[in-house]
Image (cartoon, rainbow, N blue to C red; front, side, top):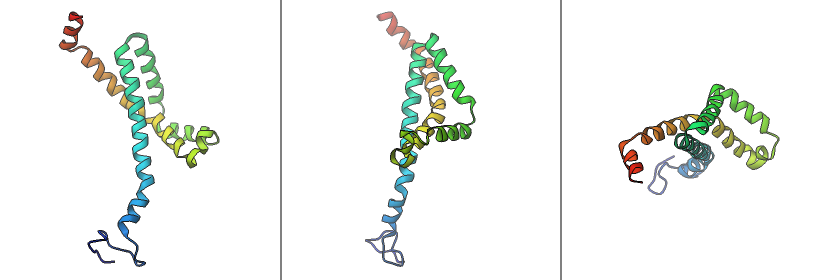
Length: 136
């Protein structure tokens, strides 16, 4: 109702602190936002670095895998993963939150992988890398 120094956002009609209630309500949203992003970065960076560094058949194989995942519409692929794994162990663990994280990561890691691969290929062509190879 009224903002006081000890209650930054004030209190509701029952005298409860609004800020603590907002923080408590946002915790699931924060977890759903940050954890899949961490998994996406981990998977995408790993695939992109391996692909860019090794080159050859490994690069070709990993980039074709990313093309297959990239070819599906995100929402359709997300729904397929959620429905297919809903009754499995991963679907039941933590009320399906882990499945949600996995499905988001499976759908969205390809953009990160392509970006990292391009950066690795770019850095491989720099002069200081060639100089380091010449030195031994």
